[in-house]
Length: 310
Image 1: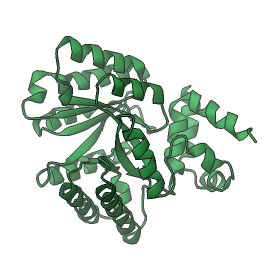
Image 2 (image 1 turned 90 degrees about the vertical axis):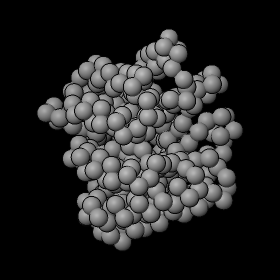
Image 3 (image 1 turned 180 degrees about the vertical axis):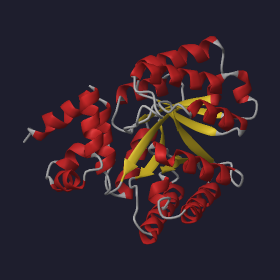
């Protein structure tokens, strides 16, 4: 349903709709399917429940496109508090962040300084930071900052989106850096000049990029693949491909979003795969929530059915 997808992606950046949805009494309850809560304490409780099912976690403190340095510093400080809580509660949790939340629209230097503090703190407590990829206007700047940080730290990873034409060359470079890469399909509305418009082409490119990582040369220096997908065809392919070639499970993991395909998450964990769930939390949940509705019609059905429950 590409039209419905485009509608929800457009709504994700609409201020009037955001104010309406956030102020709607049932919105927070419905959003909890995809968002762990608005506070760090609520998110920690979710992490503990997932860990009890042998499922690993990466935290995301929701927020993007800050408008001033004060907001960027506040977002950075929120991540530092989250890392302190991870250490204090001894929850083996990684964190993910967006560079637009760290001030990338304001200044690359401001952004780099904020992220460097987060990655440094994560290094101290022995955990990983993944830099999320946003829409294509940020791709090169995001990779530039990642490469700078990668020269200083070994606990920072990056996201690559399979729907972008440029991703094959980016993956080649990242394999050469022995990078940890979360491979996803892509969740933003992109023009046909920069991204594959057809799902079948995105799926084919996803498998092509994953194969590049899983080839013997991809493992020579420690490149690590995070297969981020809820697509059962992709997951079946990955399981078959890695089993047939006897690829060690320490070279890759599966990742999914909180609240989507919980059954499949538990199944993969029970079958001995590393299964990591992306757990978002915070008050700035509206854009994330709308992108989740855009991804699958079933999510929209869930939303509508809950709106009419007492």
